Length: 282
Figure 1: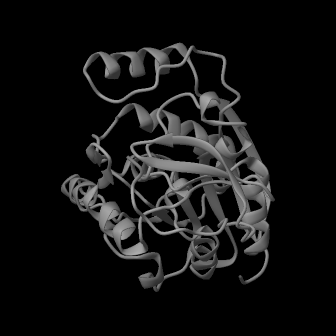
Figure 2 (figure 1 turned 180 degrees about the vertical axis):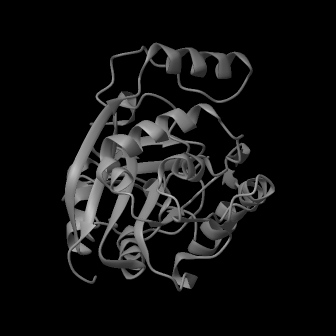
């Protein structure tokens, strides 16, 4: 069964022509014939996307895709490494930093920041999913359910980790990020390079459609950043199709959960982390 939704143009270039790229849960991802961005089309309506992000549940042909998951303490070490790798100068300078984490989840990035940033720094988080935001607040982290457009303060750095693929309007989101940054402020972006893959068979795991609305490649994300006033100053790539991940998906499948098992060390998919600087207003 194909899920009903609204038809959209390519979120990057606005083209209408696209070729099938992958399908899952009754939804289809297509690859733009003009720029190569991969996006879900048709996709859920904007109001449905907002509600699903708040509840952590997305409509599928089998019923519901639940994406609340659980807090993962192992992420702390990963985020600490990323922060030290890309922001060591900011950490070592010793000046207080105002940092906003968008899509803060259970607060793992914020916890890593609390251990690294200079004394006197301000670390805030916003998270649309109520269950995650409430869990983070119970652990003493200042995570609220505000929209980015409702943030009145300005920050030196804004991070959005594994958020980009969930955005129905990535260019509008980046403009809002730009507006919340001080002059010369920076962003930390982590996402995958799914748009660089020929088709979903090269993806190392489930696509999680329609929770993931798009899969950008490196050139796509860099174009989005450039067109909204940012300049990339650092980039790091990392393989994800490890033996550990393959065993994880095999275990998920053994438990009867939907999982697409792949051989390790065979996928061109990479996690890409960017540090980009605001050069002009969006």
